[in-house]
Image (cartoon, rainbow, N blue to C red; front, top):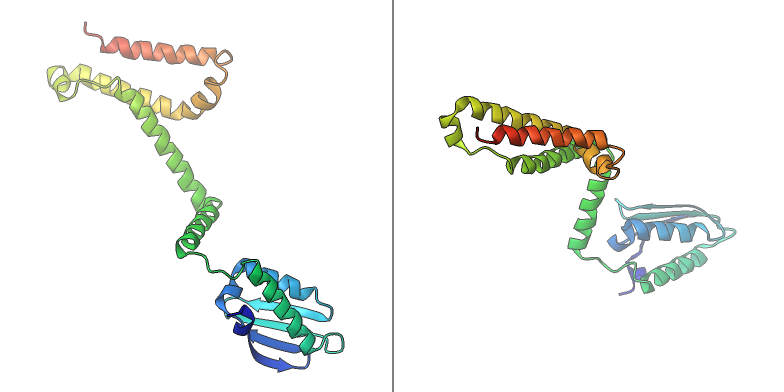
Length: 204
C-alpha cells in the first residue's frame, strides 16, 4: 500500500488542514524531511508535524495554493520519500542499539556521566597497577606466620607502591614513556623505588 493512503484528512478549513499520519512518517529524520519539503511550497505559511500525536498541521494561503494543489504536492513528496526507502521499518534490534548509544552519549556529557567515567578510569588504572604489584607479591599466609613483622612491612610497602603507581599512572603512560629523556629523574626515582622494594624481599 502506498504511504499516501495512510495519510487521513482529519480537519479542513480556509487555509488550514490537518492529517493523521502513520508511524513511519513520525520518525525524526522522515518528519524533518516532510516538514522541510512542505515549507518551501509557494503559499505554505506554517508546517507542524507532531510526532507524538501522529498529526500533520499545514497552514497556507488559499489564494496562492489551493487545497487540491497542496494535497497533490504533499503526495508527490511522500512518493519520493517512499521510493528513497525512508518509510521502511528498521529492525527493532537496530533501533534499540541506536537508542542505547544515544543515551550513553548524552549521559557521558552530563556531570554525573563525567564523574562515573572518572571513577571507571581510576578503577582501571588501579587494576593495572595491582597487576604490577601482584608479580612482586608476598609468599602468602605462610610468610605472615613465619615472620609477622617482615610480612607487615612488605604489605605496607606494596600498598605504598600501588598508591604511587596509581597516582602517577596517567603521567607514566602519557608523559614519562613518551619522553623518557626529559623525565629521566622521574624514571631514576621509579627504578630506585623498585630496587628498594626488591631488596627488601631478598632473604637475609
